[in-house]
Image 1: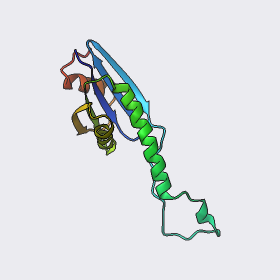
Image 2: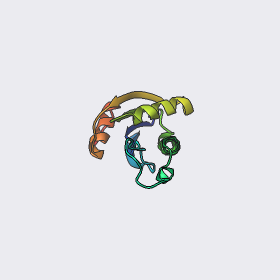
Image 3: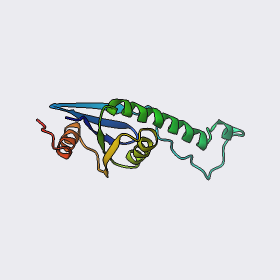
Length: 137
């Protein structure tokens, strides 16, 4: 039997479920980088030169993108033995990860990329087992 994987992910964490024969393995991978917030504009600085203390928005974005690559690589190390994967989660993180996979690991097939809301670990494990017609107990 081939190894199959499911990933629920957002920008903060990824839940991976690996199915191999009769074994189900769940792991949680935390993202170490925070999603950058927009700087608030439209007000005057109180003290002179205080604007120099603010980190440039493009610098924060580059740092976030570098952190996301590390996050994506940690997920890939976890699922690298899988023949295919199902990606689910809220927001855009799963789409960015799917694009990253296409670019850096084209051999890994994404069977489905779907938007879903938050799930408990047990709910997600059942979802992946049902998707691959794998027994879940």
